[in-house]
Length: 215
Image 1 (cartoon, rainbow, N blue to C red):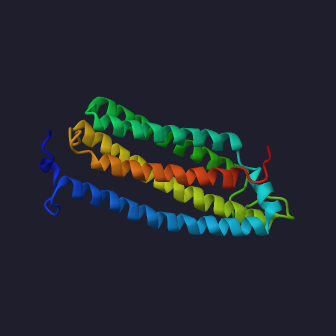
Image 2 (spheres, helix red, strand yellow):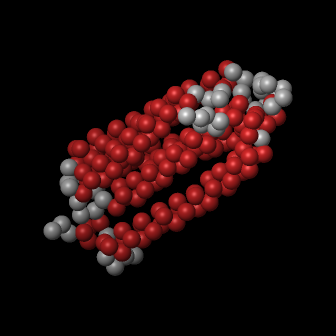
Image 3 (cartoon, helix red, strand yellow):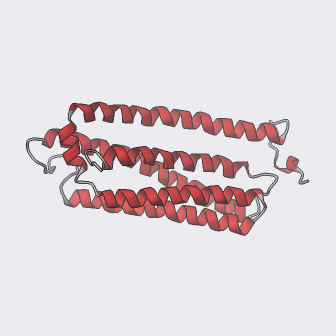
């Protein structure tokens, strides 16, 4: 059995306590993130029920296809992240690094698609402000929809940028041999963050892209 004391920080009694502390710390952080995004979701829901027609019309100006592709990209990235952690547990360093790189590339792909969507909205004059162009009957309410759209997806994209950086750092440290079957807690903690960001998108996708769409 590998000696886990090599990876033990001085403030912990044993490796199990260190792992529990790291995991608890991440869960507490994610709880604050839930409260943060929860406030935005609540505000969105209130305005959506106040202006259902305008929000539906504004939502139809988003590309469901691009939103669906991005959803598939993130779901796939969650799978590769989980597989990376599994391979770290079994000591397959090269596979772990490869899967982390794939996860990072999928996250970058998501950001690229989102950037293209933002460009489209700029070209179509759907960015809230003096140049906003929409049906005058619903222009004010539609601006509120797009304000919330840019705010929520922008904050999510910022979390994705952080996530890509975290995964890149984990890949480098894995390549350096920092993580072994005896110690891979940072990978687990990083995986929790990545999965959280993906889950946030799972809520954003139907709320923003599928408003007023019926089967």
